[in-house]
Structure formats: structure tokens, C-alpha cells
Length: 228
Image 1 (cartoon, rainbow, N blue to C red):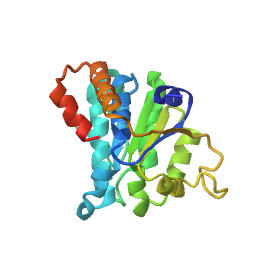
Image 2: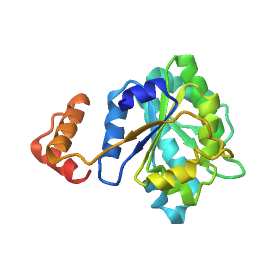
Image 3: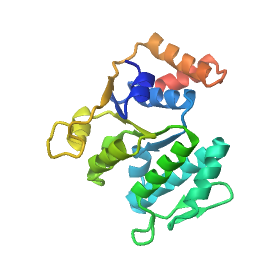
Image 4: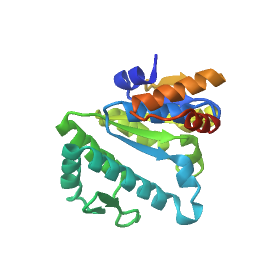
């Protein structure tokens, strides 16, 4: 089953492959070619700023992603601004929102997701929340299974997509087969990528660019291929 169908009929999907196999490219092509609003969190970007602190960078990324949604989806964006403006720890700006990362006065992550689910329900849409290379959070965020289980069980308008290049680490984090894990017993869609041949990778990238309406030359394709 392909990614589009797994997201359509499921709640939690994982894309697994070693680094440079194209999983991040697959995720981004999917997000940019389907009609659902999305939030994309690249764990590598957040972990790469250890001096700023995990929570601060994570909330800054969420603020940026929510702002993108607000600006791209006008009707949905107006409702997000309206609802989020009533919440302590959220600053509504002229162009988007800023989430406070303060542990004492900041807004809880579950509250953010609750609000997003509420708005999506009123608009009749679904929102994809994607975590690229989620296993990178394993050293600093031990409650990942609890958060994902909360979304899975309570927020019907939010779909979760995860990528990981370390299959063993990811499943150690999620603990899907551990009866004590909050995610135990949940149905998880899974895609495992094999290494694409040179021609397959180029074809994949070319079709991806076509689907998002970008006319690029062979040099651009080659550049992206080398970065897979």
C-alpha cells in the first residue's frame, strides 16, 4: 500500500529506510502534492541547536509551521488565529502565531494539537503532522509514545507520519510490542524503502517536481539525486 492510502485510512504511519534512501524526499513530495494542510518537524534541525534548548527550538519550528498553514489556507488560517488568540502562551501576530516555550507560562503541546484538531474539524479538513527522523528526539523527549497515543486516541482530524533511518531505535522509542507502552495495540502503517537505482531515483524526483508544478532541468534533478 502506498503512502497516500496509508494516511487516508490510518492514523499513524512510519516510513523506514537507511539514510540517503529517499524517505525524506518521499515525505516532502507527498506533503506538497496532497490537499491536507501539514506541519513538518525535522528533528535534525532541532537537535542541531543544543545550546538554544530543545523546547525553545521545537516551539519555534511549530510557530513557523503554523504560520505557513495560516498564510496558505486563508479560511483555516482565520479560524486558527481566532481560536489561538484566546489561549495563554500564544501570541497572534499580523502574519501568523508565536508559541511561548516557557515552561511556566508557555502553552502545552497537547493544547496546541487540541486546538488544531478543533479548527480542522470545524473546517472539515484533516491535518498531517509529520516528524522527519523522529529517532533523533529519543535522547531528550521520553514521552513521545504518550503524545502519539493521545493524538491517536483523541484527535481524529490529525494524522501522524514519521520517518526514521534507525529502525531499531525508532521501535525502541515507540515500544509498539510492549504491553506497558501507551502505543501498544495501535495499528501502525509501515513503508520500508529499498535503495533506488539511479534511473528510479531520477524518475522519482522528476515526477515529484512535475506534481508540484515545478519545471526543472536535468542539473537540478542531478543535484537533488546526489542529496538523497
